[in-house]
Image (cartoon, rainbow, N blue to C red):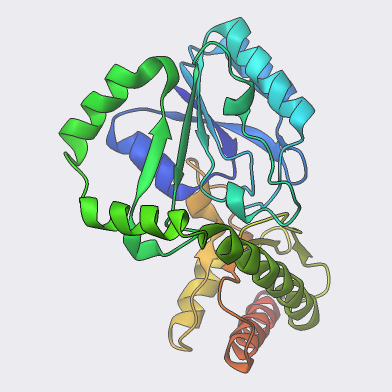
Length: 280
């Protein structure tokens, strides 16, 4: 049994399902992260072995978990003797400097497995990631061997050369600035074109926006209606193991703002209004 923040990245939950593990969703605050109170109750009641979460620039909510809560989470994991899988793939894209600390940076007994990648900071096609496994090195090496075997050396050498040449930090700084501007523009468009009462997250890093529509609205129905219009959204229910968040969606603002993107947001807003009118 694995405790996960909720909503949670659908890829992580698919991986858990693929290896025969069950996800236990823990309520998560859009500003401060996973509820430590709810997590403590769950640890007392269920045979949880691992806590899996994305505390920095969370996908899909965008928050950065405060340091005090990261420390408290680690203390909780130590008390109940469970591992933490920390996904830090967006950590370098936090808008504020210095970049937020990882839970791993507080770890003294090796129970945190820190995972990250260059797929979000450099290019998705690189597919180069890493893990600092702590006390679980042997298990991780075994999973790597039976999962993907070896990794292609050429992309790794190219990235190493890019970093050694001093290009990585300036690149990431540019990306942070661009994504922050794109976030502000996307929120402005959502507030302008979506129905009154729509709520949107305010990400502290990365390039994902979580949008909450009226209770009872079905974003699966919305996505079907958008297919013919050439627009697609990530429906909220895929971020839950139990199909919650049907009235929510995740929007991506990685691309620079353009008239084409604004038009797509407007189409989504108009389609929401149309579906609302049909059910009234």
